[in-house]
Image (cartoon, rainbow, N blue to C red; front, top):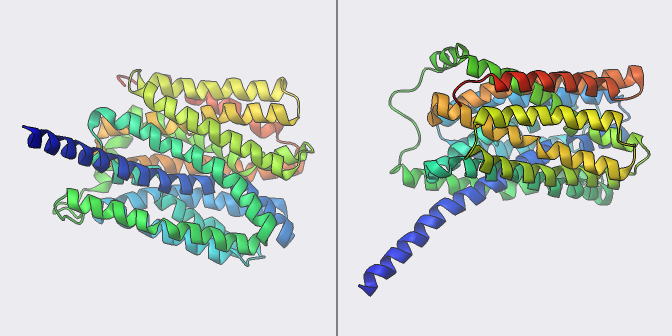
Length: 409
């Protein structure tokens, strides 16, 4: 009897490790990827200072990166179905390292578009939420999927909180070139994690490489999804989400500095944003397990309307106010990923989630491209960011309305 109990305890521990270790690995990968993306604003200012390039040209390079990040996600989703999620994750880490290395010595706008806008952004597109969750979800019981989704999504906040001061200090201590090389080494350090998740997936699938005998028709899958109003509303919402998040990622740092706040304090605001993102994603994962997904999603978009309105019309331009604003933005920032991905998974199936979520993310990044570039243009015309935030406020209100209109989820 004692032997049976010991075996049961050992089996329980092994099952726990089989779930926990892939989730931790997924958090590390997604935390690095989003930690880099959420702090593009720090890189933008550094390149402007070193290369003496106009702000709008560097904004264009980052805006191209927003498009590349979105366009590559459904492509990598297709590759994940036909090859494996682990293969895509390893490819993404190599692209991240190559992007950092190639951008280390660049001083011209066209080359910056290729390295920062294309290569580095394609790497973050490969190590995206859909691919990471696709690699992790086979180990997770269905009744815990939403909670684990929230945990993985929350790792983006941890990554942002750690990467903002790290990137700022690396550039202050080593200079931009050596800082980029150090960040490339960090990406390469996570290759064993991606390899471990890939190997665990193969063992769980009985040695299957991930290639199915009957490959899915991606055009048929997408055509069926596009005829659903639910999917259309999610695309509208994520266009707005991309518009909103890109303002934070790429221009909020410069906006804070324009208030006369020094760069280290501005980097701290990004850390505060990361903490808010982590808390919001964790809470959203728990709430989505209990409440209607569409109502959670609509409330997150409406929360952004309230926060932006308070920031524009009530808060002073000082560090305490900026910190409060950053935390509030974080609470309803990446939290939209969990209900959006869960709605897609429940409506169209978990196996199709990476590809269909990637297509929705194309809309997200189109919004990001428009906001990143237009914010730079409007700044040159008006000398402030008020107009772009007002546009964002209106779009978030529209996204809330469409999200509330989703039925039966």
